[in-house]
View 1 (tube, one colour):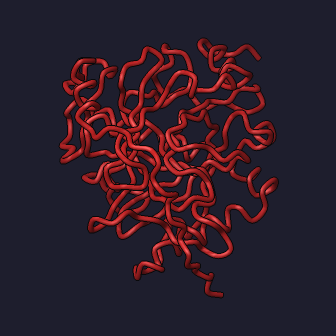
View 2 (cartoon, helix red, strand yellow):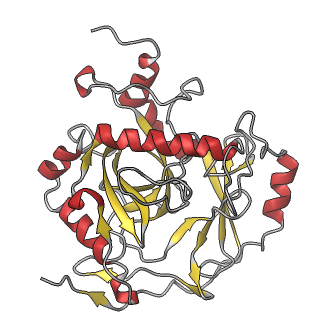
Length: 326
């Protein structure tokens, strides 16, 4: 069957172009002291310009022409639509690193609560986060929009991604991923979709195409994911989380529709069609956005942050475990 127009470019992404590594087109710059509230990780593009990982990194891992969400592709055609993922938290680590949505250029920071750095508890038998955890750029779960599937408003963040490949990634790494499915988490009354994905260059990516393939090739992983998200706040004295669809994972096509929706909400945010509240929309690449700023302004933003200081002690390990109640 002849590929539709434009699909050949996407095929290049799936068959090898993506394996060149998205990180080669992006770099990061550390500011402040690691393992402290002032630590920030800023992003640069291939031209050395400071950018926002929230707004300036494309949602789609492909040539510049492919700016819109492609039509659904059948895996029988050999095609896979790839998405860019911004890694916030490497697998098996505890530090709660996240995109600073309320700061200009949205660097990655170590989240705090009441002035203290935040770490997730170990949910027995796991250590820290059980996947490479991050977000899809150019998406936004609108807190003013009630999701008709969950009955709850969005959590005011880009959509989260759990990358299940074999490699432990680094914070700030840009990874090209295949979307496999989605879990509908309801976290403290907010809709918090969790995209399940796998890196396109993972050895198992050629045989994992949808959520049922995860069940087949990584038995127990989805069940552990449910347990983790249900319990991870309990050690902090909070109640268990709940899920839409009784905790059923939805397939790839369903997940892509969720991504499309959050991408449209992000577009409205960047073009000032909705009230983003404290969200910072500073960018340099989003055409027509009233928040677009100059390269000089972005340099000033980064230079105003504390200088990088090395030699800080290793971050503390979380030394308590939470056992699954059975």
